[in-house]
Image 1 (cartoon, rainbow, N blue to C red):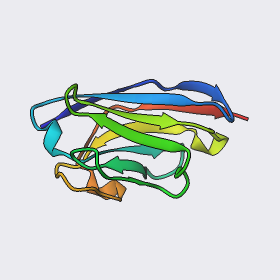
Image 2 (image 1 turned 90 degrees about the horizontal axis):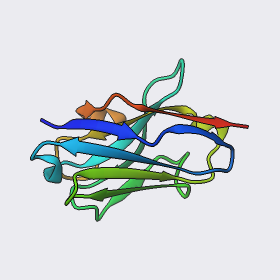
Image 3 (image 1 turned 135 degrees about the vertical axis):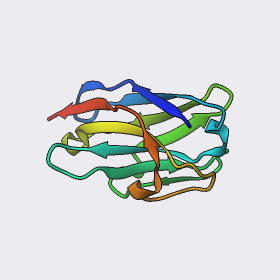
Image 4 (image 1 turned 60 degrees about the vertical axis):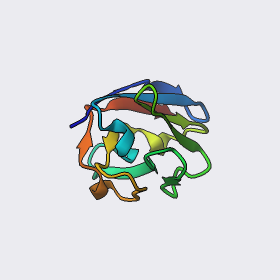
Length: 124
């Protein structure tokens, strides 16, 4: 079992940056691939980024590749998402998620646990 708590969301102008953080509790964190999902109003939850258990491999949705960077710190049980060059279409509730397996995953349905979410709003 893992409990996930996100922070770092907020309101930012288009072109700006935000850094999301996720604190995980539980002894299994180091054995899980982790990631970020997001859900905009009226839309389904979608995959944003993922990182494998040791941080060696990452994968991004095409819409954020080159702008977002996912990272993890296994010593402190944290996962981060650096978001640059933000666009209004990035506005959503962002969820930290755990995949319950170590290898890299690439779809929202591959994640089995997630937090309560943190709101990101990008104004034009």
